[in-house]
Image (tube, rainbow, N blue to C red):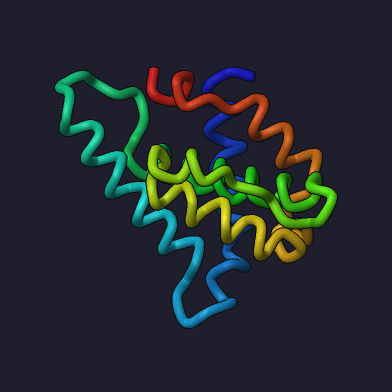
Length: 133
C-alpha cells in the first residue's frame, strides 16, 4: 500500500469513529486524538528532523491503532476481555492504554462501523514510518 492509500485509509477509518463521540460526557475519539497529538508534538520537538506528515495525521494513526488493537484483542481473547501484563504497564504511554481500553470496552460499537477485516488490514498495512517519510 503506498503512502497516499495509507493516508486515505487512515482518514476514512478515523471519520467512521465519530460514533465514539456520543457515548460519554467526553467525546472519546476527540479526547484520544488530543492526547496523541500532544504526545506527537512533544516527540517531534525532541529531535529536529523533518516529518512528511502532519501532527494531525500521526495522531489519527495512533488513535486508530489503539482503538482497533483493543477491539481486535477483545474479540480474540477467550473471555472477551484482553489481558495486559502488569510488567508492561510502566513502559506504556497513558494514551495507548486508554485507547486500547476504549477499543476493548466499545468493541461492539466500533465493529458496527469498521469491520474486523478493515481493522486487521489497517493494522497490517498502515505504518507510522511510511506516513512520516
